[in-house]
Length: 469
Image (cartoon, rainbow, N blue to C red):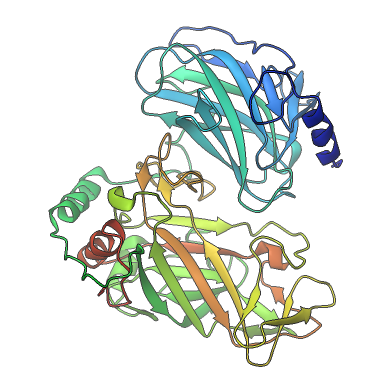
C-alpha cells in the first residue's frame, strides 16, 4: 500500500477558504439518492462535500466506480443534504474494506459537525485486503430528521496508520440498510435474553448505594486479583464447541474454561483463580514463549472502571457477555514507542530491545508487563457479535451514544510476567508481539457485580478486590 501521508499534508495546505479548524479539500457536493422508507438512501463515499486525509481510487467492488482509500485516525469526510427520513429507528450500512495492516479502528457517523451527536459507529476489522469488501450495519434508535450534514470520522485504536477503505454508506428507516447487509440477528449475533436482563437490571436498580467515606479516592474502580489457571488450545468465544481449534491460550479465572464453556457452565463451576470468589468469569490471552518455553503470567489484575465523563449511567454486564480486545491477526513490527506494546515496570525499567526491536529487555529488578483495554460502550442488545467486537465500542469523547448507548464497565487486563527477556526476544502463540489480544467471558454473581458497579463505578469511588472502599 502506498504511503499517502505526504499527500494529506499537501491537501492540508490547499484547504478551502472559510472552513474552520481542520484542513480539507472541497471536491463536490454530496450526491445522494432520496428514497422512501422502503428504499435505502445510498451515499457514495467519494461524493463528499469536504474531507481531510482522503484519496479516491477505482474500486473492484460490485458495481465498480470509485472508493475513498487509506483512511487513518483523525481523517474525516463530510456529506451534505443526507435525507435521514422521519423519526424512528434508522438502519445504517457501510461498505468497507481493510487489509488489517494499520490495526483496528472505528468509523463514526456524526451529524452537524465533527463532534456532533453520534449517529452510529462501525468497528473495523481486517476483511482480507484493501479491495475485499464487506457490508457492516448498525441501528440508530433515534436521529435528527430530514436533510442533515453527516460526518464520517475515523478513529484508530492502534495508532495513526491507514486502516480502512470506504465505498458507500446507506440509510434506511427501520429496514435493513441494504440488500447485502449482514443483519444483526444473523449468524454470530447472540441476543441478550430480555427477561433475564430486565430482572438483572431491576435487581441492580433496587440496590441501595453504600456511601463512600469522606477520604475515598474519587476514581471509578474495582478489580479482580487473579493468577494463571490453565492452558488449552481452546477458545469458547471464537471456536465454541471445537476443542483444540485455536492457538494456545493462557486462561485466567474460571478453572473449568474450555471450548464448551457457556455462561451456565461457568456459573456452575465454583473454582476460580481470581478473587473475589463470586467472579466466575473466564479471561484469556495468547501464551507467551521464551526460547520455546511457556512463560505464564505471575499475576493478573482485571480492573473494572470507567473512562466516561459521567459514569452515573453505567450498568453491570449481563450474564454471558463476551468480547475481544486486540487483534490476533495483526502481525507487524512493534518498535519502542508503539501503541499497545509490552513494557517494563519496576527498578531499572527497560534497558534495551530485542535484536528484532519488537520486545523490551527489562532490568533484573523490573517485570515484563502488558495492559489491554476493552471497549466500554454497548449496543444494549447483543451478548456477542460475529467478530466479537461489533456489539461494543470504545468511547472517544467520554460518553456512550448512537448505536452504542449503554455504558458498561471499562475492563482492562494488567499482566505481569516473571521474566526480563533476552536479545532473542519472545514469541506469542498468535505470532508477533502486535498480535497480543484478550478475551472476556463474563460470569459474575449478579449481586456481587451489581453492588460493585453501583458503589464503586457509579459513585466514583475506588474499591479494593473485596469491593470495599
